[in-house]
Length: 262
Ligand SMILES: Nc1nc2c(ncn2[C@@H]2O[C@H](COP(=O)(O)OP(=O)(O)OP(=O)(O)O)[C@@H](O)[C@H]2O)c(=O)[nH]1
Ligand SMILES: [Mg+2]
Image (tube, rainbow, N blue to C red):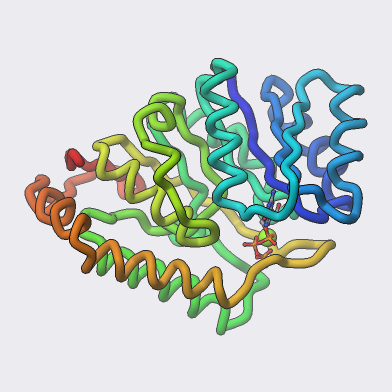
């Protein structure tokens, strides 16, 4: 299977080289696409120099900070255009530990989307404050409660592997969200297309160096996406058809499939 790991970067100078080394130590057969948004700290130039040393590394430069969602959409399109069978989402800050890559690669053989989950047995967020756990855990419970058919335990998780067929079938240009909402929207679309999602446990670590780009806006965007999808006109139709799906009867607790068609 030809795979590519999409890593969006904005000011990740210190993380980039050690991260790529760690990725290749666990999954030497994968390619990497760095999507850099003209990072002021020179991450893009470093990425270029690494790509001249290693042909597995590709770089996409964008003019300015255009957001995580559009960076992934651009990466997904690149993956489809260049004939990859599967594409990963991975943060550059070591929150998404490359040691899990072999688990993802095994799971994607029998899934359309694999999500690295913090909220199934074996998953954890050990260095998070109570408040952060509450916001993230509560957000996931809220999304599951509000979105019909959303049976994923960690729908805001950003460590994922998509099969090419999923990316070809989702209308990528119509995905508007950027932060947590982007992850929720993608997961919901994958489910409503009837694709099979598998969650595997990951321990999520806080970034070691560099600055977080997380903001209140990103939190509010996710909250508003869930409400709009639940109560919006178009979503009412998809919720109605979602309600027609057979009850979720997975023997393996972490496996999620839906027969919903949009
Ligand atoms: N290309 C691009 N990358 C971005 C943008 N915003 C964030 N990133 C990258 O996306 C990844 C996740 O960003 P973080 O700042 O770690 O946000 P987070 O992981 O949700 O929040 P923390 O848990 O606080 O780290 C990192 O690799 C960032 O460099 C953006 O606008 N464009
Ligand atoms: Mg992070």
